[in-house]
Length: 118
Image 1: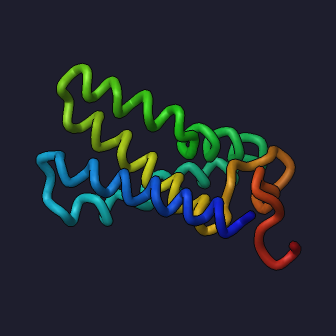
Image 2: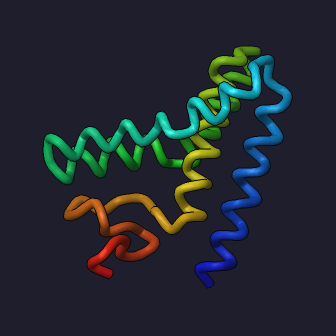
C-alpha cells in the first residue's frame, strides 16, 4: 500500500511541476523554493505541539490548493507559485513517507512512525 501511495504522490508532484511550467518564473525558482515549507519545523524549537501545528498548516494540500486557486482567480503568479510550491513539497514529503505530524513527537505522522525508532 505504501508504494501505491508513493506513486500517487509522485504523480501529484509531477502535476505541480507541470503547473509551474506555465508560470512566468525561471526554472531555478522551483528547486530553490521547494524546501522552504520545511522552515515550519522551526516551531519544534518551542515545543512539539507548536511544531506540529506549524508543520501541518504549511504541509496541508487544501491550503496549497486554496492559495493556488486564489492566485489563479486574482491573476497573481506569486500566489499561484506559493500554492504550487506548497503542493509540490507536500507531495514530495508524502512520497518519501513523511506525513502530517501528531502533537506528541516529530516522528509520529499520519503515515506511521518515521526514523530510527520505527
